[in-house]
Length: 187
Image 1 (tube, one colour):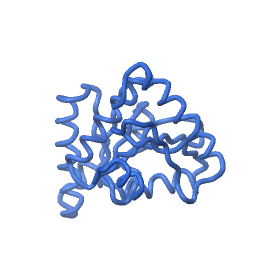
Image 2: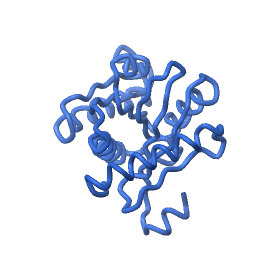
Image 3: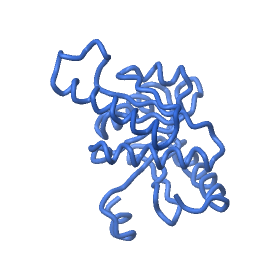
């Protein structure tokens, strides 16, 4: 990742992973790195990039926002309260700027998947990385790599601990994004 930052002269990276549940449900997911998606602005950029990616690929745009607790958990913890408030704010802004089909699912990622969210945004990069690892390394799911968004070139990376199938999925994802980029231009 450091090499990408240096080569492109950028400070922040915006990666969006393509994940698949154990029962074959695909969805885009971000942030995936522990140092990504820490601010509201960064999460909104991930939503914008993700919506652009979905549109370029001809996929439905349905965004699910996650936060650190359920609505009824308000008042139990300052960090949970802050996460829920951020989730509400991000949902409101994304509805105005990206798509009306944005829902705050609180901590209930299972509801986001049941409602066919095509892009799910975790509360932060640490949570996102934990969700990725739980799904892929423990839950029988798969990853097909993570697209670096906002670059002039198509770059898709994989986890250092990726199972072999993630490499072939990443190549297929890169090919699909490259083909879509021919018609839409870089994001």
